[in-house]
Image 1 (tube, helix red, strand yellow):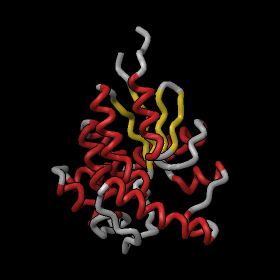
Image 2 (cartoon, rainbow, N blue to C red):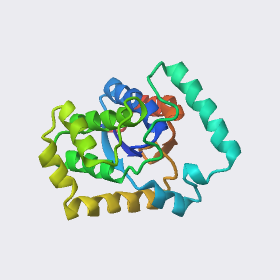
Image 3 (cartoon, rainbow, N blue to C red):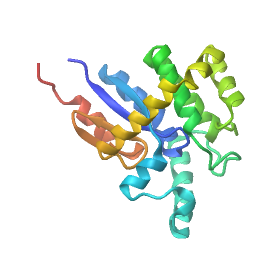
Image 4 (cartoon, helix red, strand yellow):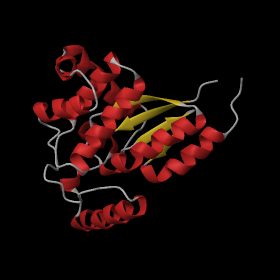
Length: 204
């Protein structure tokens, strides 16, 4: 029986960036698959009581910087703690990822997610800019014009809205957020618990 994890994510989240490749490795380890679900976290926060970074208390904003430094060191991944293009809207990037999922295979969609996250957090790219997103897509072998055209299509925006509605309905409140067999796991620091859940025997 194939194990499938729903992967609710934000394309401008450093925590999604920290967890992305480790999540992929966990999927490979267990022969599991994922459903990639970029969502509009402004809407999710409004529904769940969360606040965008710029609206959080100064104490929380200051502590976040310590955590970014700790995780960057712990995981040994490149990360600009104060990237040039942040805060930045992830909406256009989300629709590019949804378009990729419509047009291509799941592994390539996950490649694009990783490349966009690196773009924000390691490469000083503006992921709210169409040309920047096209350049990222080209760098991993996508037909950027075809991808951008699908991202701009009304059905892609409708899919983005539907995924966000689903996230709210399923009580998602942060990113990344993984759901496996009905069990939620919030945050890249919960990946070990997801790993253990995937290791459990399945019925059938």
